[in-house]
Image (tube, rainbow, N blue to C red; front, side, top):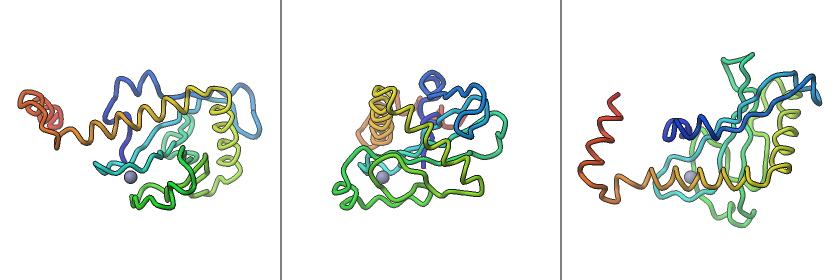
Length: 159
Ligand SMILES: [Zn+2]
């Protein structure tokens, strides 16, 4: 499982969706909720889904909900054999994964996230774009990048 912010820290800073809750909304306490994106990190795997982890400043130690988003059909995911221990089974739609102790809160956050998708159709397009970017980046070392670039990358990784 690969954090989008790890591959594209600057872009993640600007393009990570923040949900601002004023007052209590459907059981979600007031605060800012960040939807952090995680993608499958297997080069060449085209599983077309991602995981959103909902984080809030007030409980920085763990995410409050894990929500998967798959934009292809049920048929597509039935044929999809992606296995990533940290990611749920590939499936269509926006779903709550591994409901934990705070089930009520996770469900309320799921409703909030679904609403964010409905209100802003560009959001799902952006996520698909981020998916493509991650997959492209993961494929790069095998595609024969220039030596200079390769050198730069290994330098970056050592940092
Ligand atoms: Zn995959």
